[in-house]
Image 1: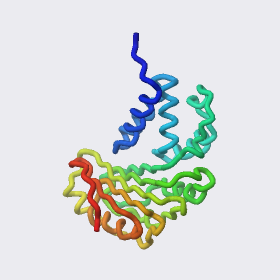
Image 2: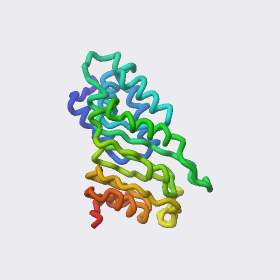
Image 3: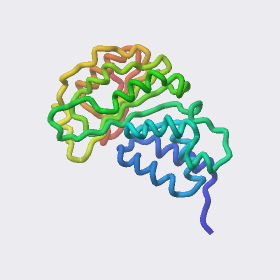
Image 4: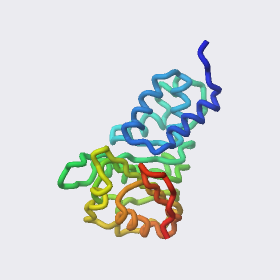
Length: 228
């Protein structure tokens, strides 16, 4: 007879796995595979995802807005629950993936949608207090981050850098810094940075002058360092 985990234990395992610093590919694989295990597993993962949303592409953002927030997915139709994604969501992360070897950086195409989404965040997800930008294979500063208008409800900001194995720390330390964010984020009370270029991170830290700032070096000992 197969062993069946109690719902609370299953939910805790999924929550801890989803909260770990995964690469975009690992996170996407978890999304797709979790929905195929069983109805109960798919439901528990959906509940966890709706609490801590990660947006992979522009079309995925549209799917979240038009389907998930309206409970119009297979997972929601398979259970009898009053769970509300709009009211339960506490954080939302945007994954920006580019070609590392592209020589002339341009704005990521998702930024237009992100700016528009932030303008209606209070209406769609009123309880979100943390947002994250996950740069994958970026090696230069992002001008669009300077113009990100964070709603007053956002008090925590995460900047996450993930990279393919071809990217070395030496390359990151020599990364282009062509644009320095000219705007501060006074409403941010906690800034967490995973990996990245030290100089760029320092500028982001200065922009969040009211925040407690923590830098986690990915791929090392994961120690938390407080920037003075």
